[in-house]
Image (cartoon, rainbow, N blue to C red; front, top):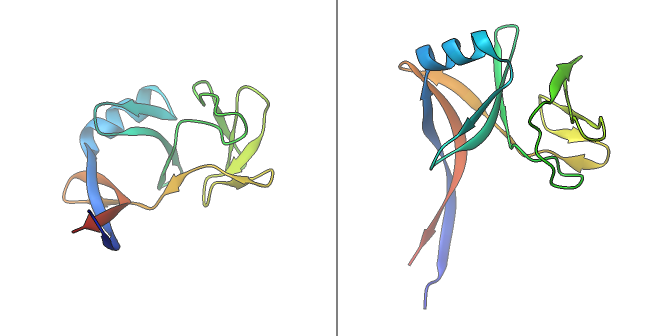
Length: 115
């Protein structure tokens, strides 16, 4: 039987900075979908933000969303969620801490340890 021994947060390389800059120059926000990540990445000013790709209201895709006054606007019902913390309409859009390090865009994710 496996037992849970703890959780820690780790920084994970998501996409090379140069590649991300190219994508964001074409489309902001950028949907990153691959075998490892399912993220929506926004650039506002000098800041980069990463969120989940589904609205917490009804689980609809945020594809086609836009940014207005520091909020992500869901294209289905126009609910607004903060880029800073994902909060909006009494719900939370999954959001990640981000950073640029050694040529990589990184997000902080939880990692669980088991025994």
